[in-house]
Length: 171
Image (cartoon, rainbow, N blue to C red; front, top):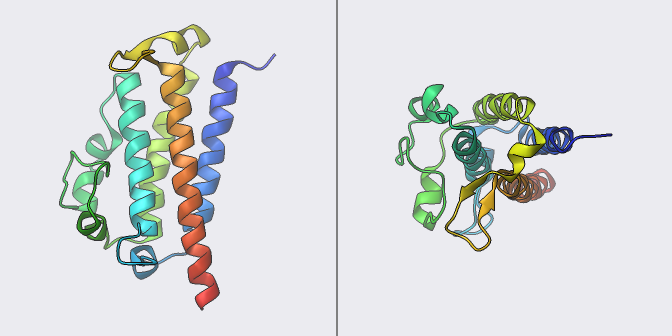
């Protein structure tokens, strides 16, 4: 029988495949393209989905975010510094998440993915019921938080792939 952890590992591996598929080979200019003045760029989408995964996994695992521990905040040198994950960004703030290429975005994503996999491999199915956020009704459990991260990441990876497809058709 497959465990819930095995299913989560499979789901996060699919997120990684989608992120790589959307980004590989893109340069900094490609990542900065916005289909209209208020649209999210590929770079912002990749950065945001990675920050969300990093923040949420670190939260449920009780670990420091890779963004800080791995020095990625300094490497990216974005205006939000160590705190921002993109929620509530204005159009202007979205535009400031730029100046990096796909190789850097994917390196950060892969570091977050490694921390995610390490956490999941140490997770037992009973831990999925642990409440991590009582601000909702019903309260959010580890399992619900993980599924939420998967959903969010897949949506943003799909959006990034769509924009990349539009760029490819333009060339």
